[in-house]
Length: 536
Image (cartoon, rainbow, N blue to C red; front, side, top):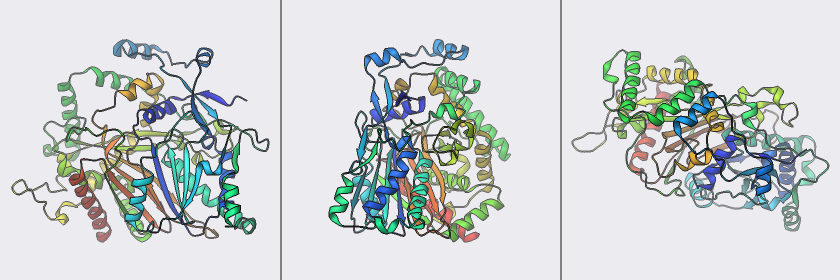
């Protein structure tokens, strides 16, 4: 079996994002009920690594001979040819790369044990993340994998990874599996011999190989090509949408945007929802920040399991999901500063439910929901800010002061239901747009985004909940999910994750230059959810 293959369009996209220093990683931070020793974590990670090729593969540049013998093949069809003629784009493949299995790596290449005294406080965690994690980019063409684990104070784990092989659902799957593997050591009675914390023993294990591609005990494979297991098939709407967006004049875009808001007004039976010149992008100010400056502000919010249950029940009564309420609360927080521009919320959609289980028959993981990899679509519903100003009072123009917060946090459930309908209608269609990566020069596509306004106002990712079993010896008490600049790349970020013990944690963040706007977003968002809880 070959231990190399060409990149999928998805992998190529994230690889170029990394090369051009457009942030492509994320981190998750979990607090466990038991301490990790080096021997125990070695055993746990070794079991996990051999199950998931994403954990032992890398990207390498091809030689000229390899490029000639195995060139990348673009799809050709009548619509592709039409797209090529109309866009006159350069469809050369550019520098070629391959995915290859690493020869080997040691535990110290991917794991470190450290002590951080104030990590249990919000400010301590934020300080550690901003100083030690966010700007730690991964590099290709070396014998180290594209993920890292940091064990803090023995009980807390940071999983940090490049986005090429790991999406947000990969991260939550990592923690679920880590917890389950840890519990297996207790259930099987193996934990007793793995509790050593002797310095010499730990140093020896840290320098030991945790993966070797010549290990005959394990079958070595390659990451699944997500374009072959998930329906990333562009529709005619996707093709013509790209063509029209590239060629129609700006005044036509405004007319289309006006029509969109007219439709929105018809839904709510009022012309007051029509914004005057709502463009497709939010252009508050010039984005002159260097690509490597990922983040300026972070806020963590936590809602207890009881509060989450109240939110879920209220959402159920209003026939919406919690993600739709959270998205609306985010848009309400942005509305006062949107200057009548559209508010675009980018939401990654987990594609694992669309994977055909038959495509996994030769894979070590048979359940699509447990897969690592990047298996996502993205939907970008648009909130006309005029609509939200019915629920969020605007800034007082005379003195520049904000009105009372309680008057700006009233949820209009008709808007939340509209947003829920957008998710229901467009969720599966979100994969077709990504399928266009199979028809274009991905390098040029990524390169053209440099120095341009962000694609979305705010990127929101809700990856779900980690549930503990009643008989678990080791429990995951709390978990945080932080991704400064998501798939679409936005001015603000909102990342949501939960456990049944610690409740729901939300990470809000922004890029430099939006401090005042971010403070307003944070205050309105938190107050909105708390008001819903109080009224529940």
